[in-house]
Amino acid sequence: MSNSTRTPRKWTTFQLVFLPVCAALNVGVGAVVGVVKLPIYVDSIGTFIAAALGGWLYGSVAGLLALVLAAVLIAPTAPAYAGTAIVIAILVAVFTRYGFLRSIVPTIIGGLIIGVAAALVSAPVTTYLYGGVSLVGSDAATAFFKAMGNTILESVIFGGLATDPVDKLLTALITLGILKALPGRLFQRFRNGHRFAERVTPKDAS
Image (cartoon, rainbow, N blue to C red; front, side):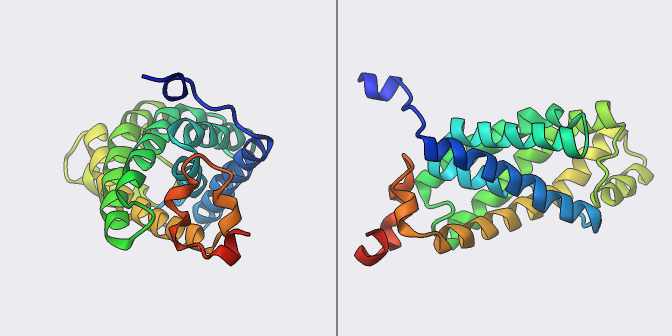
């Protein structure tokens, strides 16, 4: 294995500046959705973009930075979902190798899978730290399953499985649209940008 494979590249100034942009996108959109109490989150768009362009570590940092920002502005315990942010970043980075966020079918499949994974990883945090209350619209689904006689953990898991796949599918489709709209020269600034530059014309890349 070569040194270039084992040693991660240093992030450029542009990439470092892009991280808080992605974090702010997570928190901003998530806050708006939370206010209207939709049964989804849509608070991972920035993580999806960062992981797709810069790899799983870059995406993880964007996600973790968003949680720190959310802890300051919204909920002090938000960093408890750090594991979920990292899992999302890893899956996004892996799936982009197979067409995720580049074509519609892999994006749909990948979004649903990421949603299932996020639900399973988040459930213990929501259950034991928040008592099963996530302060978003998905609480209605949790309450429904609790009324069916399930434990709090089971209800949170079932509620998450009912809402998270839809949430991450929507997030993936939004991210797909954003990546298609970004200028071609931006992709050249990221290690995985070549995966999304196929649609760029010479004029766009100049």
